[in-house]
Each structure stands twice: as C-alpha cells, then as structure tokens.
Image (cartoon, rainbow, N blue to C red; front, top):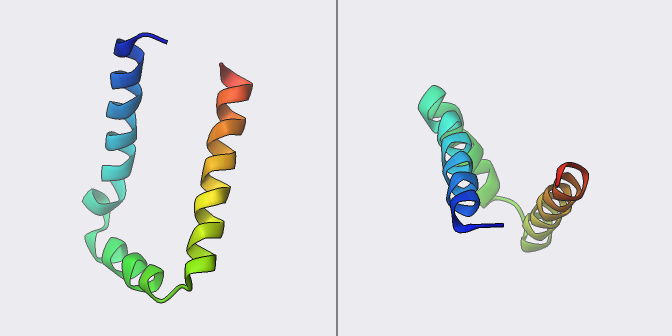
Length: 62
C-alpha cells in the first residue's frame, strides 16, 4: 500500500463520518447522548465489532 492509498482511505472515512451530522444534526446529537449512557463494556463491544467488520472487509476486498 502506498501513501496515496492511505490518504484516499482516510479521506473516504472523513466523508462517510461527516454525512450523518451534515444530514441530521439533531439525530447525531441524540445518538451521542445515547452513547454517553452506555457502559464501558458496551462501548468496547461495539468498537470490537467495528474492528472485526473492517478487518473482514479488508480480507474480502483486498
């Protein structure tokens, strides 16, 4: 992987991450309020699921 691929991937992440607050700011705030109420273990579980989904996608598509 060259550095250009890394920066393109990072740019795509930023675009995707920015879509929800741009399209629905009130929904985005509501989601963060709900996230703040989760226990640490629940947040870690979602983080782990995200990591595993990303690794699976890299394995499938790379």
